[in-house]
Image 1 (tube, rainbow, N blue to C red):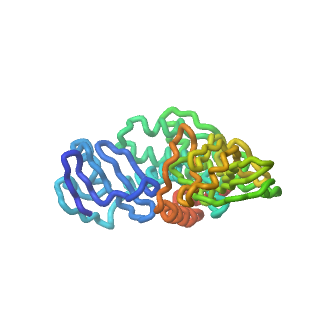
Image 2: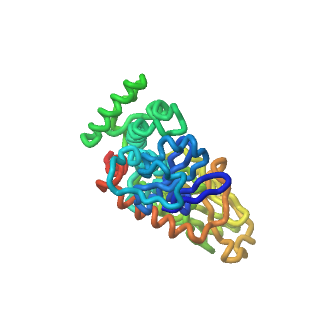
Image 3: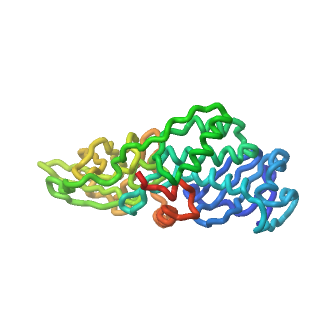
Length: 333
């Protein structure tokens, strides 16, 4: 791994190219990052306080002089339990923010309670190198009920011991009600009136809270003439997490998505001037966003390919022995 120095930091390895594929760990004096698609156990690092980071970097890279080197070869053999626990913490944080739950793509939602339980145990294993001295206690306090399953018994035992050490009372494991994950049966997407224009656009994950929409389904729009008026109608398939306030922008028009149709999709409709029909094709782009969470931005032409790679990655993690427990058990509800 290459080691570079700037006036602000020491850089170890190659930083992941995009936020949606970056699993991040905030450690004392440095940030560690794993590229979730590269599947490399060794992270890259950005060291902003070498003196503080020097105490623990050897546990990640296997060498005490990593900050003085220009090239580092990380041994393949050794006791890497701390590094692996750090990777689990970073990966679970990534999953909490970016997991692409999607009925369309066959990717089930994660059990949030189980994710936070696994995160708390892994955090306890790396607390000595974290920037937040209260990280374990905070992680324990954030745990809610999670699905009872024989596969989580070992984790539950470790969790109970950790909670006792920190004096935290845990919520009892419970089987939650099944979320309304699949689209509702019945209904149709037929629109009254005459559809003059229609199309579909991918949803930018960075513009909506994780789990608020189906990560692999496009948002659909139609310009409809009805009783002498023109309407813009929008529909997007929901994800497993309810409650996010969503809207869509088409040209200069914003549409609140505060209704639903017979297919269970989030929908919205608003009257528009007939001049919307004169928009050039390049401007007929629908952007779904969450007001107050992110502002609508022009689409990134490379984003669909990057999202497809994340979707494939998530699909491969469900049931995989190489995945975190939370990912392996996704969908068992």
